[in-house]
Length: 429
Image (spheres, rainbow, N blue to C red):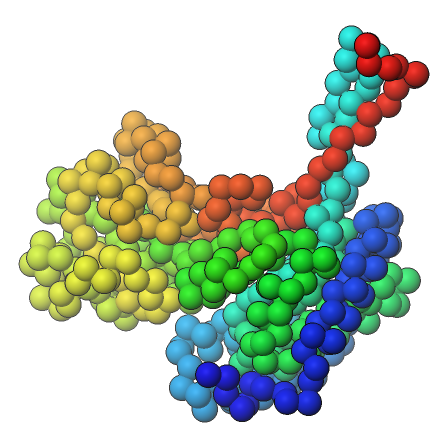
């Protein structure tokens, strides 16, 4: 049932959304052929606008946070929603980093000359108009808008309802920078209502103007989009991330990685949610790891072996192994070597990010080869699951699908390709 707070009875949803789509389609046609220098100028100007308008953005964010707190939203959501001067500066720097990357549009990725003299090139081209539906993270507004702009795509953004004011304030900066550099401001638009009917309309009725939808959020959001969408979806499923500590792991390294993977930021999709410890290494690894987590303020839920190692551990249920907490809570299980770890991850994982900690290169290579996730790491924290950390400048999210894009979705992943064929009068016999 739609709450009155989220419904604008005066808004004609079909008319408004159709106008967004038509404007985006026209903007996409212009952006597809825009010079890299012009797009970069818009991105750098947008970074400046974010800095200049920081007080206004922070005021909008304060209103959003107050509303979220009044609704008793989770600490994880409040963390993702919250902005401060440092986070706005980080958003501005991200735009500048994206501007500094090579333009992916028009890049020749393959070229060959056939025996008949035809020269065939495969060339990167924009996807067109992208709809991005995400939860209340204002930084996604700037990152997604910038990535779409740089890759020559128009975008229609729909952020979470409790971050509505913040996202609108950020989007205004982006659209203003576009217009000031001679590009269409309609290339970066936001859905102007919190009414969920607008999302349903975008997913089901805008097949003529939306080329692909990218959802970014929890399982319920992803599943709803995949169920309702009549256009292609680049799916970003929940981050049910695992860290497996092998019997040959260095204890000090394991401690540092596990604490970072879980507690650096608990509310992001790359945060570890389950720790798996090799049964053969429990005597020297299990109790110190569990103790360090609990001492650092993390609630640990474990199986019988884990509870024996530390009396403060709470019992884990079957549900815990499949839960993305996005909080200072971690499930811990003892497994029979790398075989047990791979089996557990295959059963409960979301295909997002999983890590192995070991000094045994054979175990590491097997884990990297056999764990079927978008990102697999050896001796590194799962919190590196981020486009910026991959040297991509920024990302829209981590795709857990297998078609078109997998892992961090950045500039390259927001393009498709076409073939350009040059001849000299050839005809086919």
